[in-house]
Image 1: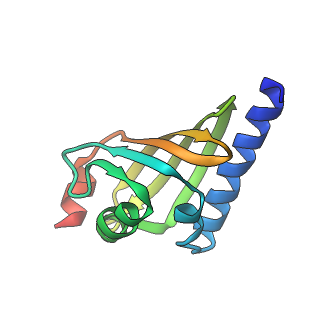
Image 2: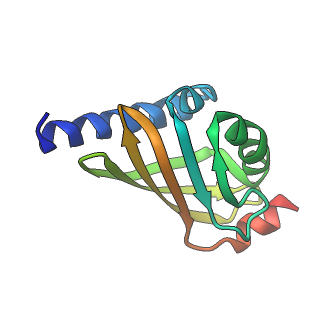
Amino acid sequence: MTATAKARTSLEIVRELYDAAFRGDADAFPAAMHEDFEESVPPSLPWGGVHRGPDAFRNQVLPLLSKAVDFSTMRLESLSADGDHVAASLTAKSSKGDDLHISEHWTLRDGKVWRMRVFYHDTAPLLAAAE
């Protein structure tokens, strides 16, 4: 597979996952995880640190994240890919109404989400919303 075809495929996979998430399909992302999935989130957040596998995402990340972020306001601003690496820029509101700017960096392996790093421009609104 050429690098261009691989980038397109990775981009499409991630775009489909965002579309599913925006429709409220909470199972799409865990179902798309590679068996060795690993997510890194700023450690200062209540759900921060490194999480491995779908169960860690469902049980350790999602419950706390959903208290802090108003998912109905989340918008995908841009999405770009180079091979199996995909970068997304998103905006959202915290559950208390503060603006959030999020960058998510995905690495796919075998058509599955293998690694993900999440960055927030400012974690203070998330900390306040998670209280």
